[in-house]
Length: 311
Ligand code: NDP
Ligand code: OXD
Image (tube, rainbow, N blue to C red; front, top):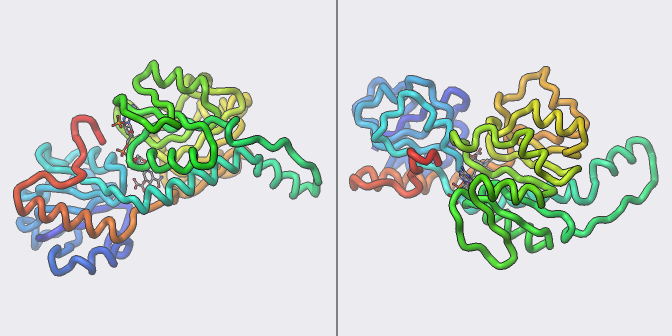
């Protein structure tokens, strides 16, 4: 099976060479544009593909992403309607994401930003210690990653609220919400808001003035979904007014973040460069193999996203 490697932002072969080498016997990776093999290409591995990328491959059946989110592949104008888009579901990534988010929740709960400022000014001063039971954490998105994050947070004693599109059964120590009304009810009880949503037409711009205003005053945002979820001007205003005390941002509408962006030196913003956690090499290799097997059998690959729903 020929698999085209398609990205305008990453060299997929050097990024995921180990995964591709490990399955080379079954899947031959060819660099886009694979003019000599265009007819043979039945699957692609893609991340931020060029707009016209998929027009070159008349026999394309499936496109795998290199992440949990498939938004940038789904947005590609040349993606034919019948092609399956497959995302990676990786428990190792969910575990790493949980650790990353936990760290930022505790950063806020234990006032580590204040301790850092005190150290810089050589101030020896103890601060109020807040028990986790008093810091409510709301998860926007209770999917593969959100469920793992919830387990870790509840184990440490944080009250966890979870928002999803559909109503679902939850463990006794979680409170679930769904739909627009559910969102507002949840936000009224939220101190730390963690965004773990896929980017879809419904979720674009969801981190906005109304959402921040509905939260408890002095709240905190942990943004690890997609940059386009956030209305940046609304975040800056909420930080300025004190409605939010701070924000940890891993994803941005423009990546890399432009050098002159205000977030680089904002005292209440903690930034990481879209590095919360990549998928593992093993998970990618398994996804590619499962997709090739399904394509060969004329079946829908596992973890193909619902293109109508957008995730
Ligand atoms: P899943 O598809 O497993 O879960 C998505 C969750 O979002 C589900 O609970 C779903 O609800 C909910 N959701 C979707 N649309 C809506 C809506 N309109 N209203 C309310 N809830 C909604 O995704 P993952 O957990 O695997 O990943 C989530 C996202 O995290 C990715 O799409 C990506 O954007 C981001 N991510 C970022 C990384 C980083 O490095 N920063 C790394 C990995 C992921 P329901 O359960 O009802 O379907
Ligand atoms: C992902 C990501 O979606 O790393 O996996 O952003």
